[in-house]
Image (cartoon, rainbow, N blue to C red):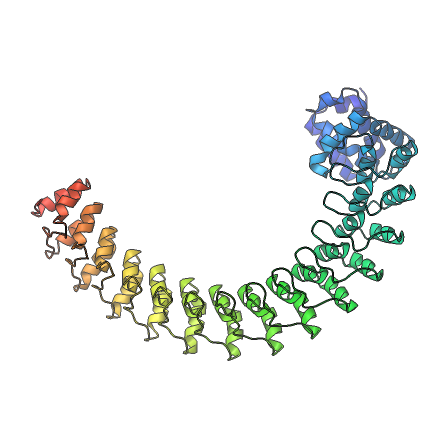
Length: 577
């Protein structure tokens, strides 16, 4: 049995073995042996019937990879040439390798040159070209073999194609990319050099995004290629793409300090160029947390440190939002930044740092002595309010230690920091606020809810205890519907909260809301037996109370099908009507 027969009858274990051979350099099968074996398999007339054979995919890719560097071997060249002269075989190879290599199937015989260009098979390509294959046809995406070779960095293949004198060096694919754009974007330095040496390439060609080869070097951090392009003296170092971004903008976004330095050294870039969102290189670097690029820009002494983007934010605003202390120090050290600037939402750098819990940045801002600690955003929230709302305990502590903040500041809904702490069940936050001795423990929001109401509604017993211990929280405080904390807790079936309120001894167990309903009504409607028993055992509830519609707790329990509560009420002597 020969090698080819073994390969045809192989299972996946053989494929794995050959992959291992390929990577370990075993001499059992040389690269040329493997290439010839793969090509032999692919040469069979009915090899398409082997599509379920796991080795076929390996052969479709492996022949080219094993041939690279050995395609001057007469036998390899002969077999590869024969394979690529067969349209059906080319389609088969293309359809198999496409998912893993990005190769796109061609609909004509000339796709053989594309395959050679993709894999860098110069020797095979040379023979195909000598036999009349055309070097400049486009695939269905408009790419020529030169695009393929440029993208993959196959230098010898590029030379071969250029020497034919038949390739369009500035050919564009369906995305308007030229071979130079492909090479530059992928950091193919040697290919870029070859293309530039022709003196025929458009160094400022723009693709579908409006980006030039130089822009792509900034996007993908290819400083050597950027240097080559700039040395031509022909590139526009400040050209904007369709989003209004320059190469410097992209270097800032991606934190490419070396590319940024090359661009700045030209002296031909606008350091404050704005994109369509109003972002400058400095603000874009701040957004992306690249303080290295920020330092380069600030060192020019030419950037506007207070420039605002479309959201109204400055580089300092973004630095505060992101919690970047190093960048914050760089900006503050200029002595030129507005530390209290507001964005379109009314947020200042201090507000943004507070919202996101960036304690270190807040300290830096507060140390300037120039920030308004009680500044309000468009929702009326101060830094302390937002910190309390977001449960940022360290930030709240930092602000309280200043002794200058309004601890009872209200937002547009009438909520204070204590309201938020109570609603969130944040005991540590509640304690911090109460210990100032300056908060109103019974403050009401626009719905008439107090911190105690919110703690009761959300079953936060720990917070309730802290509030009740102050002696300043009204246990019978009513919201705008006339409901008390006990009414709310009872309706929600929170027996532990109800028990806690009853233990205070001051609670009105028969408090009526605007519909004339007591806490017992809510229990009857919802079927909370434990709470019903707790209320009736106080001996203070009117079990036959009537609401504004003349209904009693028992009639409501029956109406809502709460048999357990109805029976309990009956035991305590409740009447139906």
